[in-house]
Image 1 (cartoon, helix red, strand yellow):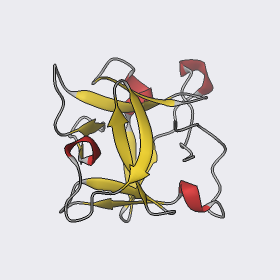
Image 2 (image 1 turned 120 degrees about the vertical axis):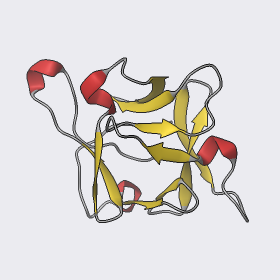
Image 3 (image 1 turned 180 degrees about the vertical axis):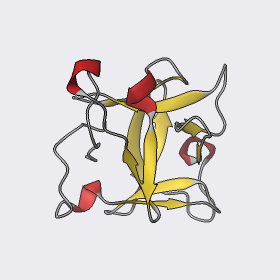
Length: 122
């Protein structure tokens, strides 16, 4: 499972790289973000090509969504404690992401909205 934690560029598992060609998000330890049921987790990346459960797209609405969703578009949402897949738009600010270079980061929102900043790998 992926847990939310305080951001630190010194923590390798918090440094992510997005491949626009392969549509995968790779953590600093070499594992890829993967959808597992309604949860998000980390797993070794597909050898030649990313697995369908590891292919993500950055949508116009600011959400990071699973490309091959079954039963509706699913977006990555990160709360104060964990990451999960939810129908896109369901959690608003918890699903908004931005990129710094080729690294995605969650868009911070005010504490009154209940959103957390940054996600951690684990």
